[in-house]
Image (cartoon, rainbow, N blue to C red; front, top):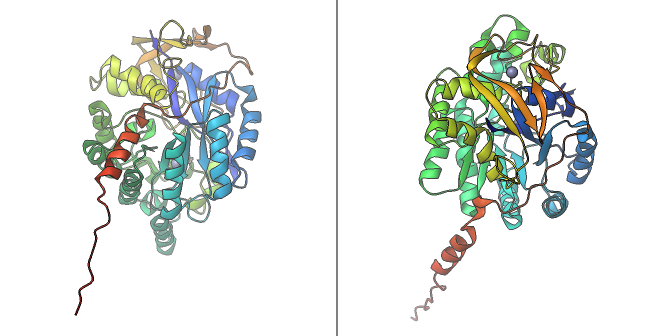
Length: 436
Ligand code: DUC
Ligand code: ZN
Ligand code: ZN
Ligand code: ZN
């Protein structure tokens, strides 16, 4: 019996790349509950840059929730209006994290000057800055290069945005956040390059959190070369799933504590939607499933193989997320006073993953055919049994919005460090003009 999983990274009912994800707040959450996840944090996408309008839209979409959820806010442009709206989000709306895009040139991407301003704002609010770390200018150049070479298939996606671009942006974001002295959360860490930057930063004492996603931990990029377009396109996400070797290294980093918690980036498109990119990989909607599979795959890959303990399993799938986003011990714990979100995972029973039996609305599954040990047999959400005997009992409207307060434990000591820095600065040096 363990505390229910918390998925820190999902995209339900999101408009993206000319499509809408096919899992909404009901189907995505039902799938989550069937896989032992009892809370998720989704990314609100602003409407024409407006955070308030974006939140209003997500408040409507999430009315059909059957599971508890919280929100991060994505920032798709940065100016004074957005800066003011960030205050409202933190002080009135229960949002304590903001995601900035260093990629998606021409749409969401913000440059270093604005990133610095945004980091300063996050710090003043006690909100956690999150980054999608890829060098957007270089990705754009990589895409031009692929098209010139006539590489228009899904493999072009991976080739156009190699690990070095993720490593570079991760290092830059870490250094800028360190300069401002505010904590940083790097979402979907997919490569050794990015992971090593996080490792270095943490060793030097910087407050950097690294979130691998389950696809990056357990898959590799070989499918992108599959001659069948849909088979390949279903693996297209950003940053890309990397060559074999990266996943193993990320698993090791997770087991050593270099990376702290596992998300999914659940962002589903079906075959028809993926087919929008049949002539050009740049038009394939980016995203893979995972919300239902995460708890099973992390158990099978990490616990069953002996890489992490059961205690660490609970930490990386639930407790650490609750602590980072300041909802512990209401979430992430089995205690008097906590929400009764509980799972029973039987280490001796096996699971098999297939699009035929999963609860997502997607007609494909990137983990198709995976058989493993450790099955979630019971899920209890808010004290109610919602998953038992392979059957779901869920109702739209039963999920609650979980407000998240600023200044999580990551902010401890930030003020002291600032004061120390300021006092270390000497008074301006008095200089005398030489007389002749
Ligand atoms: N990457 C994805 O694959 N999908 C959603 C957004 C993102 O950054
Ligand atoms: Zn399952
Ligand atoms: Zn992203
Ligand atoms: Zn995402």
